[in-house]
Structure formats: C-alpha cells, structure tokens
Amino acid sequence: MTQEPSSAEEHPALRRIALSLQYEGSAFCGWQRQRNGHSVQAELERAIQQLEPDRLIQTFAAGRTDTGVHAAGQVVHFDCSDRIPAGKWAPALNGRLPGSIRVRESVACPFDWHACYSATYRRYRYTIYNGRRPNLFLSPWSWHRYQLRLDQDEMQRALKGMLGLHDFTAFMRTGSRRAHARTTVQEVEVQREGDLLRIEIQASGFLYGMVRLLMAQLVAVGEHRLSPDAFEARWKQRRRDLVKEAAPPHGLCLLRAGYPQELFSRAGWYDCQPWFFLAESDPPPDPPTLPKAINQDL
Image (cartoon, rainbow, N blue to C red; front, side):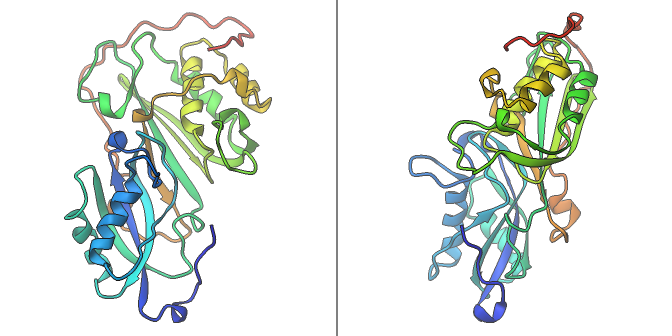
C-alpha cells in the first residue's frame, strides 16, 4: 500500500479527516472490506459516500481487527472535499451508520498524517469473566472461564517476558502476508477486579491473530496448566505447533491507537471501553499447584 502525497497544495480542493471510531464487532467479518463478508470498512465507506457522492472514497485504519473483535478507539482517515466542516463529520456519519458503529469524534489532520503509518502503538484489551455463574450482560464482551480461579500474578509474570522487540512467530496465524513476525511489545498489564480480569497489551504492531493465540496460552498459565517459563519457551523457540487454540474474539477490543501528537480529545479517544463492575464475587476454586517444568500441550 502506498502512502498519499504529503502536501495540501497537491490537493487544493481536498482535506484529510481523522475519525475516532467504535464498533461492536459481533456482526462483522472484521474491519477490512471482504468480498463475501459484512465489514466495518464497507459500512463506513458507504456512509461517507452518501455525503461525498462525486468522489470515490477509500478509508485507512490503524489496525485490522478480525471477525467478531470489537473496537473502542479505532482510528481511521479518509480524504474528502472541504464542503463539510471537520467536526460535523461525526454526527453526519452517525445518522447514516448502523447502531453497532459509532464515530466519537472527527477532526482535520495534515496530508502527511496516516492512520496506519503514523501510529506509534496499538493497544488491545482482553476481558475475562472468571466467576462461577453465567452472566448474560457480560457474554458479548468477555470470555467466561469458570472452571478455576485464574492466577493473575503468574499471568503477569509470563507477559513481562514479552517486553521488547522479539520474533512472535508462535503467535501468528496461518495466512498472514507479513514478511516477518517481529514486533515490539511496549507495555503489558493484568488487572483483577473481583471476578473480572483485564489484560492489556500495547505494541508497535500486532501479527495476524496474535492476541487471541497469546490469550489462550496465557489462560493456561493462569490455570497452572503451563508455567510462565514454558510459556516463554514456546514463543522464543517459535513453537507454533504447540499453540493450538485461540481465545474467542468477543473478549478482545482494540482499545486505541497512539500517535506522536494526539489529534482527538481524551474523552473521545483515550480509553472508551467501560470497565465492568460486579458488586459480588463468586470465584471458582483455585488451580492446583503447578508441577515443576511443566510444558504440556493445551
């Protein structure tokens, strides 16, 4: 994909608009337009096209979320005429988009700014409901793990070893078009509030399917089926053959993408997925003691 020209003089009648975008991903095949799927990109471009009927619209996103994955702060840009003020694009689009997609904010940005190429990080949050009983209101947004109480300290220890630039071939799904599997993990965090766990990972970029494959392995660590050392050995040794399961998509949310200079207001972009809260805790039993040097398949 080539980047557009970088000066406004080359586009005297155009402007570039950046959007802070949310979507509930259950009904979509992901962000990217696909021939035989219902995508977020197609819905957004259709809505923009209604307001720009004389120009072929193409949108560019900070990250390509997969089927069923949500976004709280996806960032998108497109070029358009200057007929509509930048701040008016958000309400104009929301009146034309399905209820599962919402534009939180729209701003003008320079022609040399790109939603994908200008991003310095993407941050994902995975939510796990670790209570014994089902909860209808959490089901669309979390993975229900009710068998054992997850050990968040062991999970945090496993994640910390991923910080820095590494090859994560073990966490890349088949079908990726990337030339390599290297990326820089910048921050990791595991937080527990009662029966809810929030795992956040921030990186310069993510591989195809990376977070969901990683989360299934991390749950194995939390349930003491896999030690943090064995977890680290799997990805350092690029053992994709041992990474056999992926966590379900509905627990995953693209929290935001970051840039050298913030374009949006903090309220419209920074952390727009609410934190769930349960008044009472009802955890499953603790996992058994982890045997030494365990490295079994999931």
